Image (cartoon, rainbow, N blue to C red; front, side, top):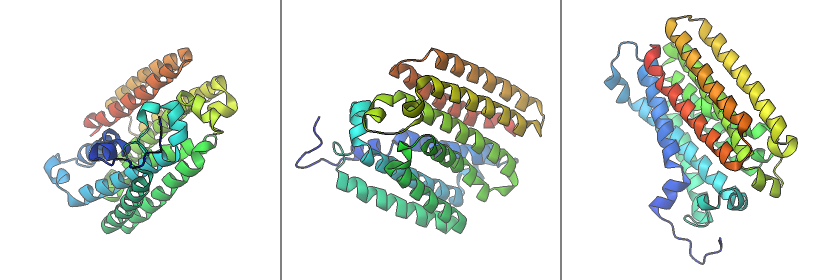
Length: 291
């Protein structure tokens, strides 16, 4: 597969692939679900859905995330040709020059729109854009720190809603913590999945530095800390629904641990990465029962 086309075609389909349209839709879904079910005790969902501030906040977040996906592909072409050759987009479906142009445009638009809603959101979007670029350019090739950055930014996408609905801050932060921590675990799983390419190109991810076994043990510890933290955060409001949700989380985590113990092939870690997405989706859907 050659990346050196005289003219690299640029199509809407290619751009949508580059920005991970499905992930962006999931982000929008998560933010609106949070606003409707955690920040709307009177049940007037239409009022929340048509809130222009929520639309602009979500749009600004999506633009920053899209820019992050593009720049990540831009820097990872060689590694992705080893790890996921069928998913290489930049240089194939979208030229490198167009990728940089889209990255800069999306970031600028995301920062400006965020600042229009709130200067705090604009500042956070600026910081997020910087860290996504730094992650793609350097941090993801270091052990753990890159994983933490992505986990933190994933949780932050939910936590941003608190600027619009501060009265529901506690519930929003619990779900932001949930999204962030489980995204962190998923990022480490993806490093296990991509071990071959990362090792070939000198990336010092946890699996490259520690090996598969020690990285698995580290994930077990993280998962234990995550579960205990969620139990503690929800124990303040010791209602029956939180107990039931925690028991479901414990079951889902048990399945995850079982599959991680058995995992030793690329496809096994790919399954676990997809399973993490399922847990994140179920976590978002659980908001229906909280308020």
